[in-house]
Length: 131
Length: 272
Image 1: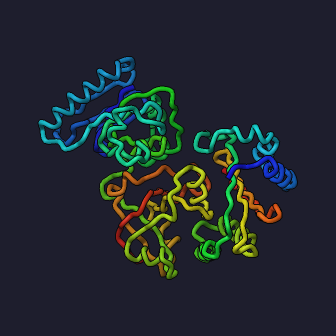
Image 2: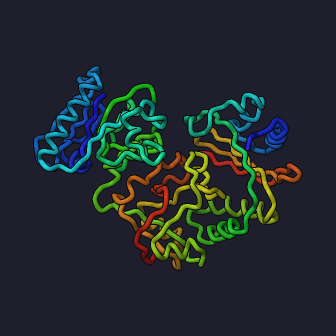
Image 3: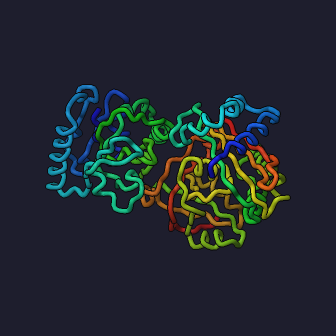
């Protein structure tokens, strides 16, 4: 989905309230909507280069939560991964069947995923993956 | 830069270590002819047409000796973008032209594509190349075999595809459709997306309809993902080389030796 100006403002507001927001994400959030929309797609960027933010609507699916629970039980990637998945599961569990707006920010190899509830624009989860 | 690579990475590895100045190659190694040596630098400036002629000549020799390797010339003006006419003719399915080029065929490679390939093991050279952006500003020609280009970046398939190399995929035994298929040795991607964003989310366990499944060269890692009650699917890497898609650079989990395969894979189901 295309990120509208109103949605961009919502995203930027959410990022500005983030504690421990990584500098690269704060930099992207400081861009105007027009500038951010003209950034190259992630496939066309190299390390350290800002990519165009991506947004998509996604309904929280029960089978995805089952997948998370299974991964938590198997714990194939160690404690940090376990913590990441547990946080993600806790954030998503109350919203099964609800539509989210999932926004991705890429500055390779870093990534941030923000999840907003579609119906009211509330930020429900942020995940930052950095090298 | 002219590169003609061998179909036997191990032969190169054993007899002629690759360095960035010189690639010693053996395009007709199955004939046990003398190794042909090319100095990259001395061949700079020779027109592509002349090189193509040389390749065709070697191909004729090869054919006359019964060598089965194919050497169509694929010229890509920019890696990952539209192929030129010659390669479009070979592109029947409308997929990325890169995914259409069989191992052993000739293709254009960007200049500097081999820069930094100074590792002493096939694995290290593969990793170096896979994590290196390939510049678009120049091209050279080379033979797939030791070299391959997948998803817009260079990867040394020959090194990766050493004889007997197996890939493993751990599938939990949870009674889902994925688990049932896993017990039959079948791995089916959730979707079709293979853009970099989708691949990154796939590796990070996000809810995404990526067109790939995850495999590893390390069976113990597959065991972690299958659990004790699951299935480990095994497949010969050589069988699925044309399905390999470059893993996005996510340093955090790079120790898993993860390899992404597009489309459905039929392998052998085994117990963890």
